[in-house]
Length: 223
Image (cartoon, rainbow, N blue to C red; front, side, top):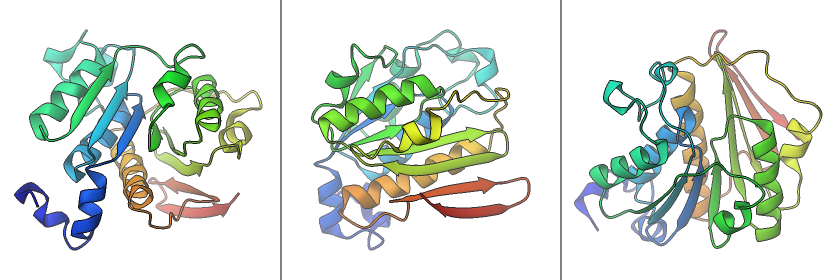
């Protein structure tokens, strides 16, 4: 067992730690949510990460995105994510994909993955991702943020969960994103991902978690 993982034990067993090292995970989006998700999975020791984003860092990202900084402005997010993974944990194999997920690449990106984490910021791409994961029989750990609030759930293959949440002319009121909401949502998603990869039951299976940090309200809704 690598010394870097000794504090993971016994919260995860040595056998589970070894299982994580054999898993392949796709993270779609390397911004506010994705940067933290990638960080957590890298430090947990997930064996292989594919990180996807066609965007570059802008000044408006600096308030919340872990991978952003003055020196990173204009730099591709996927490449910055890969550099971070290699710097933090060279035992993790990372493949950056500098592209936006769409109908043309969704199937190839999701094929062969053990799990997909949704760190997207728009409804249309989420529906494309869910359709591809249904065809590839891969579960999605979904998360989304808005201001003080976040939500997270699982989208099992063929369940149409994201279509239920986003399929009816969904449009956000604005693009407000605070610094502390993305890491909270990403922590929930990463924790559920680790449980799924280790064949533990997920608390989000069939449930939608809603959290409001302004009011400190937490609610688990059965879907």
